[in-house]
Amino acid sequence: MLFNSLTFLLFFALVLFFHRLPLSWRAKKKNLLVASYVFYAAWNPPFVLLLWISTLTDWYVARGIARSAAASRRRALLAVSLAVNLGLLGYFKYAGFLLDNLVVLLRMVGIAFEPAAPDIILPLGISFYTFQTLSYSITVYRRDAEPSNSFLDYALFVTFFPQLVAGPIVRSGDLLPQFATPRQADSRQLGWGLVLFTFGIFQKVVLADTLLAPSADLVFADAANAGALDAWIGTLAFSGQIFFDFAGYSLCAIGTALCLGFVLPENFHYPYAALGFSDFWRRWHISLSSWLRDYLYISLGGNRIGVSRTHLNLMLTMLIGGLWHGASWHFVVWGGLHGAYLVIERGSWHFMAAATALRGRAPRLLAATATFTVVSVTWAFFRAASLRDAAHIVATMFDGTPAALVDAAGVATVSSVIAATFAAQWWLRDADLEQRFTDLPLVARGLFLFVLLASILLAPGDDRAFIYFQF
Image (spheres, rainbow, N blue to C red):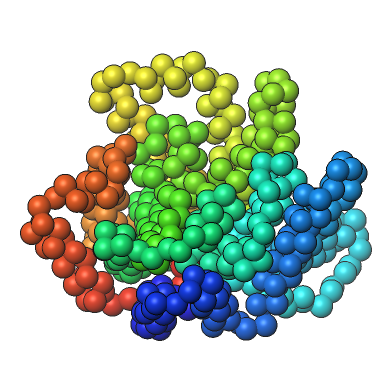
């Protein structure tokens, strides 16, 4: 069930209607839990079983950890959570990848091995809800929080439909306390929630799918015949597409939750106006980058064990972050490149600090432009079908090959959207979106929303799923 579908609008209208009825709070939470399972089951009903496995495992593991005084038993229980959750994730997401690489390795030593294709379907959102349930067990293990006393609240935390399949990856401390007391959106929350949902759908349907995706698809589907301009336009188009697609989903999720009275954390904060790569990862997919920092990077030792170990921890964290996105080597390379950028940036920390601390607008704008350009080029490894295609696209950017794929209209469209995106994010870099919107005159707000809604309705659209559904 896609946010950008009539089915979802009807589903959400029904959920909102029942949530605003004069029912007990427990009844409303049961309604939300059932709605969340229906939302997930609309894609593939049997995979609801995986949600139940993760839910029950971490519920009982966390309670066992909280009751245990012996460190060995606490570690064993945490190992159960890790084994079950990562085992399911590993099987469904990485079994085929590991098998393919095993075949290659065996061929390298002269052994012919042709296994049957595993034909495994990747469950929707498994990477997201796996990290969410794991964070709950790890938080209890670290004694940063007590386990929930309500199984209903905990089950709803795991399956809450606005953010179930593509985030934000919510921590138990963010959402569980909100289930403890009755919640219903007031007029301000309901209004702003609907505005955020409109922003998100506009970003997805109009900007990502209609204006940017065609050029990105054209270039990456025929990477071998791309010229230099094609390579730049296709890569920049995907840079904008993936932002508007994923940030659009996050805005829809946050807006939907707010309409019900719940507050989800911000997941994107104008990342294309970042001053350096550390700043980029504080602004891009915030819920994942903070999860990797808190539960992986710090667990590896963080920056507490010397410079070399810090650099190694950064690389490992980003390599695993790349692999989280997809079972393919080009995702690993994408993560490794970002790890290398962070290591280089950290190694030249004093220079970077001096550059970004300059008060003049020009040096900061230059730093943001350089960061955006490097990040955009690196997206080629994320989007390409293979490492060979990605390397060819990046090499072609700098060899002057004549353009052969993207026409003048495509070049103009992508260039205009990307330039406007960068300018808008630079203007909003440290702003609060709601405050900026409410500061506009009422007529301007109404006209702005009318234009967005008209654009959504007039967009040809092809009902594309959100990109991050595949992760």
